[in-house]
Length: 411
Image 1: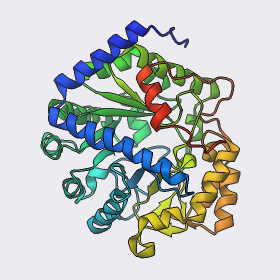
Image 2: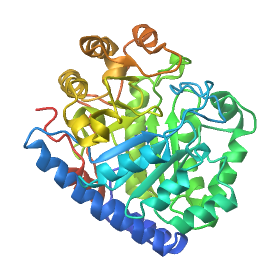
Image 3: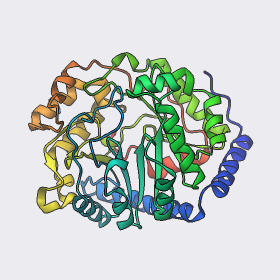
Image 4: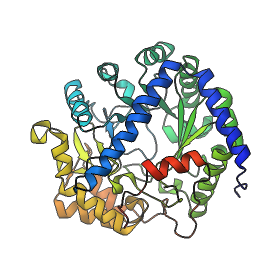
């Protein structure tokens, strides 16, 4: 598709309409929590991160934590051992981890699984840290009306609910029957209870034509969804299904589609993989985000299932563990020198070299991560020199220029 030429007036109208939708459909207390804990404190966290970089210290301003490996679905391309015995990060470890990160300015945490709502202490964590903001990556099946009401009471979390296609596609992609209807029910419960609600899609061959289209965006808006996140399918894990991976032209089409939606539609569109100039970036390569596994392993990102450190090292001093990690430092250097995109997709051979140099352990229960890495073929990611699409919406451009960019990783 071709991106329509941006119309500043139209973009301004769409932005105002989004503000009106947020103000009239989300709880104002939740909006305040989002604006302060995520917005204002998140910006301060990035400023502290930039100051640390001058001293050569890499402690990410945003952490993603997979709190359990359990899930009720069996998705294609999932790298988590959802079919293995359940393992949970304990409340005590989560609490200590978050408190440690807060002491260095962090306030935002992405909560992943498995399915995070299967963790019995999830709400206890949210309630213990009202000064933080949490984005919960979920399939939505456990967001009942009761759960949504409780999320509204705590006020410091947004559900990001994954939708992977039509009824039939969803069932195939997610390994169960009736998936989409249960997911849509979760979205409805979240919206009805005035939560700030997002929808995420791992865009692949089987859902590209159905979801990368204006009609789907219009449907999300009509449902009351406030933001959407499209990310490209990553052919990793024990059931990688590489035939679902996007072709280069599809990645370009998706990027142009995201720009068009931002210019014209009253819905926020999240992406974490491009800077204000439209150049690709990798959050792990820049050091802006790293990952904690369900077992407490400190990993570069969720799809890199190798580690040399744990949250239990250094008496639980996460700052010391991350800033002194030779594995993380080598990963950042190697990834940034090879590509602005995803080194896992483009150069799995280089990731293997990093793992072997540091004797990193396989953090999976299946103990198959190295064999899976060796079997991977190079595939396109978001790095596409010569075909960059700069940010056109002034709000996104300003935010990315000041608080989310390469941080010198690619110089």
